[in-house]
Length: 487
Image (cartoon, rainbow, N blue to C red; front, side, top):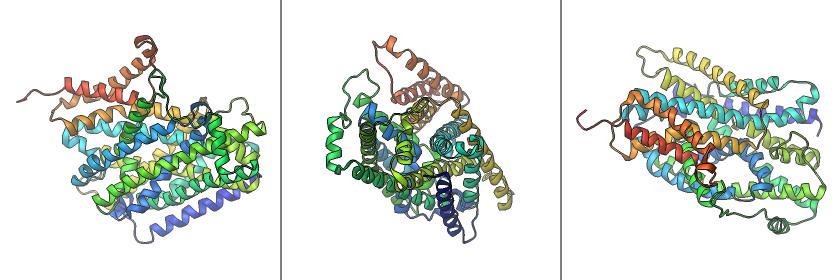
């Protein structure tokens, strides 16, 4: 593919997003539209769109790339997602709808107090800023290396272009726009995977069944790891998947804001359970794509160059070895992943900052016009922060991004997991002003434990289950801070 053709594809796709944005705000959009979509989003549209928001560029490229080293063991993590979605549908969503929340972290203020509330909101901001920036980096860096480097355009300019475009189409409609643009992004990402598998199958003159058999012969389809000291030990993977889902979806304003835009609780629950079930075949499809890519690379003698990670296997093959049709297919999926990594996050971060930190909904005499003006500035601020993080990560990236993402989530979402567990399943009242100290010490203790686990536990290495350990440290800390009866 030529850079000019790639650029044209990018312009066409971006134009589609702006067209959808225009349609969603034809009627006068206000702050209720931005924050909750006027609570009028069809549940099935939200469920379908959340697939793309959940997958993003990490699943699009990182998961296929990891198959060579980790086989299909990632699917055990995905199976754990189902248990997590059951908890979200049965426990968290009823709570959020009962309290009529816009920001889910206001629950912590009602349950514990002001400091706990701000701590929860703070950890979401940190988690989402870092996580979404990393997701977007994975996609932007491919565009940079395959297109913009050849034109002498620096990474900073590429990132800035994406952030400006995302700002423009989410500025007014917010979550109402995101719900519908997510459907487009999901369609292109899934389509890119299916078409890529078909094209490689034809190129290798092998049927889908033959490819699956070959993947099995090469050991790629191995699901379960039984070595308890391996970070991919199947029980660790399953429970890590369950808790990762609870925190990265159920305790995440970005994902929950879309659910809260549904018409009622029942629709939101149908959305979550449907979405969770669909993720199983979708992720299996991505893993199968990974095995197909590695088979193709082996037969064609394709090697990743110095400094390249397994994340770059898919773009290398699609853009350089399969022709224009495959390149265009991949690029549409890639751009979809780039946008889905940031648009919903910007809306959610803006919502949390405006409501939880600035208290815009609580200030008497605050006009709709004034709230909108502040919201615009906050929106731009977070776009700038994401741009800085993406550029900084570009200087240090040296591993598959999905591992980085889940590792960071284990440390940043752990305090949220502990706070919500204690809030929902105990009657403890805690000394609220000391909660931020616990929230800082818990990730620190988890990191020290993980760094020394092989020495302490006879070779045991923590994987993504460090999130559960982090949550347990937070629970212990809150137990120590509990107030005695009568206080």
